[in-house]
Amino acid sequence: MKLDHRLVAEISERAIEEGQRRGFNVSCAVVDASGRTVSVLRHADASWQTPEFALGKARLASAFRTSTGAMYARLQKERPLYGTVLAGMNQRNDWMLAEGGAAIKTQAEAGESHGGESLGAIGISGCFPATIDQEIADGLVEWIRTRIA
Image 1 (tube, one colour):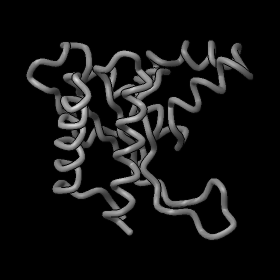
Image 2 (image 1 turned 180 degrees about the vertical axis):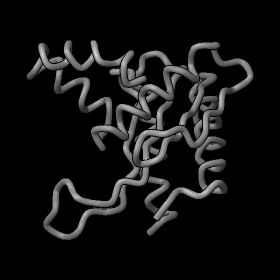
Image 3 (image 1 turned 90 degrees about the vertical axis):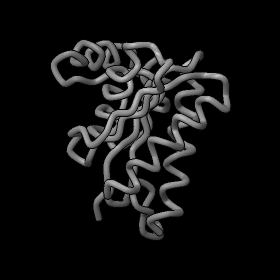
Image 4 (image 1 turned 120 degrees about the vertical axis):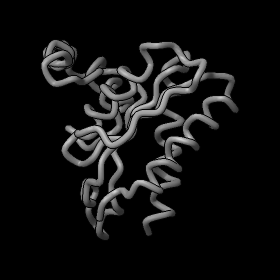
């Protein structure tokens, strides 16, 4: 299964609307399962750097097939040196180790905790604190799962 252009457009529009609902002008990036850009949309009043940040978060979420918020928190607490190494790889891989990225996966089979087919990832940037970027990204992934089920 792939993310088609209509769904990607709807994801981006919902991201911008959710950011505004929360009082922020955001950018939304969507990448495919291999981390390649599918779409980037910046609210007209969002800061100029937010599209690049959103894209970096989406690429990291796609690479590790997880939430960047959970990864960021885990690395700070349990493996800070690994987090430093990973952050050092940000530029080489066009990643951004920060909250606001979420992998898009199909539902795992019964009994699997990490399964599901990877479809891509979303990155959101423009909120403060970045935990709000993560909330928007996670909410979009849940919405997408209802659309592809």
